[in-house]
Image 1: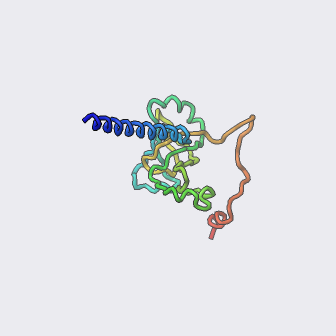
Image 2: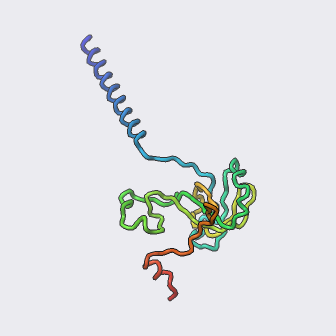
Image 3: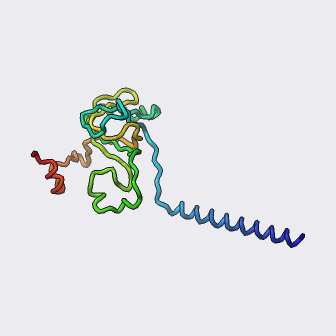
Length: 175
């Protein structure tokens, strides 16, 4: 009987040690990870969830968390803003991350499903922005907003001359 108790205690102790060891490994991996955490500041609201988000003429509302409404003061003085959002309806298999050219294309198939669109700011009222040209789906979480154009050192940062791949130039040529 005493031997059974000792064996039982040894098994329990081994299980406890294994559990602690696994927990320590898990904590070590978590602390070594390069993960980040973001929270939405608002959401995209379209007239209809069926609306084609690629249609640049559509006007879309961005509903900002009401607690953040004061952070929008002065935004109406800008004609254009960048909307940074999470593409919540895009699913990407990890094996696609290293696909050739994936980082050289404006496609939703990227390692992180983050969207960036330059939009025209039409109106600001309380915690709501009305914008034109946003290619985000209805319900997309908005991560941040940045005014355009940027400036630094007393100068506007505008790109007047740029290059694009030949295939894109061919796509945009008139037939």
